Structures are given as C-alpha cells and as structure tokens.
Length: 317
Image (cartoon, rainbow, N blue to C red; front, side):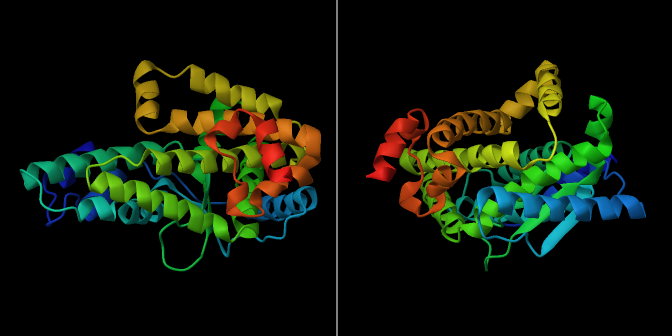
C-alpha cells in the first residue's frame, strides 16, 4: 500500500475524457491493502456450503425459481476494485461524453482523484455483493465475497467468523433470488438509471427517474431483509446490533465519508423497505409480499412505501 503511488497516479492522469479510469484503478489499489485470500480447505468448503444452503432455504421460503450466478468469487479488496470499476465506467459514460469542459486537465485530475477515493473507501467496507452488472451487455450476474473485510469485521465485532460469513452469504443470495426470479428487474433499474444520468449529463435533474430508482432499490433491500428473517438458520439480532453499534461509533470523518458515498441512503433503504414488507407480510404472508415481483407495475411507489395499505389496495384491485 503506497499513498505516494496513489497520489502520483492521480497527478499523472491522462487521456481525453474527464476521468482517467486506468489511473483510478491504479490509485485506488495503491492506497488500499488488498488483504489475503489464502483460504484453507475448510474455509473454501464453508463458502460453498453457505451459498448452497442459502440457495436451498431462500427457494423454500420464497417459492421463487432462481439460481445463484455462475460467477461466485471470494475476492480481496483489489479484486473488488477491478470488478466494480467497470460498473462505474459504464454508469459515468453518458456524463463523460457530454461535450468539452473548462480546464480539462484540472477537471480530469479532480475527477480521477474523487473516483479513486470512493472506490478505495468502498473496497475497505464491502463485505459481500450481488452484482447485477447493470448496463453491461448480456444478462450475467455475479456474487462476490470480500474475504479480508469479512474476517476483519468479524474480529472487530468479536463474533464467530464462520457464522458471520454465513450471514453475509444468506443476505447476498436473497438478492440473487430477486434478480434471478425477476427477469425484468435489471432492465427496469437500467432504464431509470439511464434516464437520470442522461438528464444529469444535459445539466438537468430527472427527479422522477431518481425517485423511481430509489423506490425500486428500497423494495429490493426490504424484500431481502424479509427473506433473511425467514431463511437464515440462526438468530442474528446480535449480529445486526453489533453492526449498528459499530456504525454509530464511527468517528466524524468516517461518518461524513459514508454520507458522501451514499451509504446512509442505503441504510435508509434497508429500514424503510423492511418496514413496508413486514407490514405487507403480516397481512398477506411472504407469498403476498412476493407479488411485488410479478411485474414492474407492482413495484411500490415512493408514497406507497410509507403506506403499505395503499399498495395492497392497488395490487389487489
């Protein structure tokens, strides 16, 4: 890990676009300890068993027909950066193509530095990730486990590593269920994302597109929490509480970074979506809650997320 190499990569960023993605990758990895992925035979078997068991339990609880992605990887932090930099590049392309900017060299350096910091911070915090590979060609998905972070956080929380790893696996497989059983979901998210980004690239703000995207992601996170409550084969209130205590105990700089990176928004999506689906499931059961994935029109609106009865009345009509 070398802060000097990271700063040099940013300072020497080149190219014609507003972001030098090769420099982003170099700078982010230079400032991030990759961590180890030297798995023991038992640990490798444990990851496989966790994903296999999660798939079986989520299928049973949700009655959804899905499979886990062909790509299931145990990664270090550098692997995660490489996998996700392509997503960031795809998302940013419309903005990058939006004509010339003043002082392109300065702009490129600032943008390259910002993106490298963002990826470096995320790489040190992400535990597991279901990646729908939005805006990519084809319909492939991927499932990642950032092993150094899982081991590190399990140690910091003083929880059993195998149990913590299994909890992460179950959570990510619930997302695989949502996207795997709902072929239209990726396309819906891509459509809303493209509309919002195209508007930004033109200097406008498509509030409706971002509101729809936020509502859809809130449904994704909330339904995953509902399935987790039913599918995980152990009580995990202690794990959630320790994660929350760790979040609350962060220093002010870390809290600011989390806000800037949108991690606070993700937490809000979890909590809001969980409340919505708990209310729906209390009246209709998990099968009734699963109606949200029958068609795009069944996704809750922003207003309905805070008024589940309103959603139920519309879907039942």
